Amino acid sequence: MAESMKGMQRTCRCAEVTEEMIGEKVTLMGWVQKSRNKGGIVFVDLRDRSGIMQVIFENGPIDEEGFEKAAKLRSEFVIAVTGTVQRRAGAVNTKLATGTMEVTAEYIRILAEAETPPFPVEENSKTKEELRLKHRYLDLRRPDVQRNLILRSKAAYLTREFFNKEGFLEIETPMLGKSTPEGARDYLVPSRVHPGSFYALPQSPQLFKQLLMVSGYDRYIQIARCFRDEDLRADRQPEFTQIDMELSFVDVDDVIDVNERYLKYLFKEALGVEVQTPIPRMTWKEAMDRFGSDKPDLRFGMELVNVSDIAKDLDFVVFKNALEKKDGSVRGINAKGQGGLARKKIDKLVEFAKGCGAGGLAYIAIKEDGSRKCSFAKFVSEEEQQRLIDAMDGQAGDLLIFAADRNKIVWNVLGALRLQFAEQMGLLDPNDYRFVWITEFPLLEWSDEENRFMAMHHPFTMPMEEDWDKIDSDPGAVRAKAYDIVLNGNEIGGGSVRIHQNDIQEKMFEVLGFTKEQAWEQFSFLLSAFKYGVPPHAGLAYGLDRLVMLMAKADSIRDVIAFPKVKDASCLMTNAPAPVEEKQLEELGITVPETEE
Image: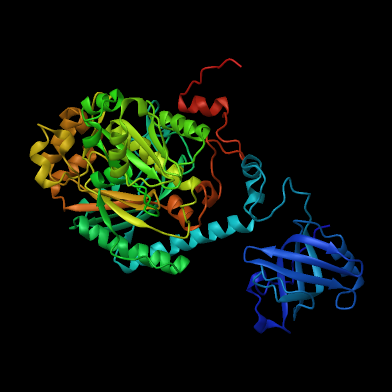
């Protein structure tokens, strides 16, 4: 029978008890992690969000009625206990912050009983994620999950504290806005008042924060909820959180400066980790050439090597065909010490590469005794093989992998293989935080599907002034004043200097395939505002979920979100999305076609 806590007041949380409190009386409240009845004595591990305290129940300090209550305690019962803090009589538990102490109970109330949970509420659970997310309210009790969410709360607090001191204003932007193109699919919200019309949930506060710059709020910050209807993976959710900012009268260096100081402050205060500043910078082209990725992981080497100058002289049709393509190249990576990899494992690497867009892979495996296995040996001489090996700094025991195609495919394949090898070889230390700024992105990228240029970031990104004269003759060569901040192979934030001149903005829309009328139809409120004096401005947005995931050394952003969705964007706990009553649909003027079972 559950009891009231009337007349009792918690004095502190379980793990807030310190050795200075030995001999003092405390009242603790929480959940029973574990109960062990040894006959005349009951040991209970009492848990709350701070940690665990061992509580001892035995006749004498507690009366008979209290001891009977203690004897029937089970996992996840909620109890209140009053007792005296003592030094542990038995062995010290070095795994607990409170492992040198225990509380001798003098009074107990059972505030709520609990059924046996569908899985143990314990750290580093081995229970399948689907079952844990179905009962997320129980999963959230687990200490490792609680630590993640406490860290997230601390990161949000520190973020607000830092930017407030830097003169930023926290301003909210609308959740119900207008659907605009050039992004992922929108989540649409039907309007009852305006039948047939829809709001869109924001994919980001981009247009509104630019309008705030037009309005004179020269430093804006918001921890903003955003929504994108896109395919999910470990670091994506349909709803997510951005640390969103915009600044006026600034250029690239100003934005980078304030954000380097922010990251240094955040990691020091939240984790005790020193971020070395200035953070290295690397152009997009250098990152792609060296690492095959615009979000390079700098915790290990294994950089790409361009061997096109050697490959062009070889009588190997795969290499020759690649080099005849526009932007074609032959590049390789050296997986040190992997020369003895079994043929089956190499075949798996080839299949993995095909999944990344490659037609296949070529390789030279150098055995420890210096002998080698070359997958294209029939097309090249021993001397030509040696030229490739020398270019790749190949040594006994190494595995040299080559990809040949257009740069875009070669980068994608070798960049992914590089990470695959690093994981297999144990090169990814989660305690090593390696930051890098990626700058000078292409302004545009060609879409074969759309048969036109698309904005690599968004249509409001400022081109580099020295490249603007190429916008008609060679649009793909125009670089942007855009920048990403990357941590351990993850893009944690990105931004750009914005276009603030009407003529450049109109030309940008033209290059992207918008007529003047279409641009005004979609962005009229922004373009109208731009008639009235626009300051130069720039911004950046972090993915808070992804940032905290890396700080917490978690595997997925689901581990740092209280109530996440799964891969099909559904919530296993609430069963959302779900059908609604016909009356609600009628009010909105929506008809849902019947589907066959």
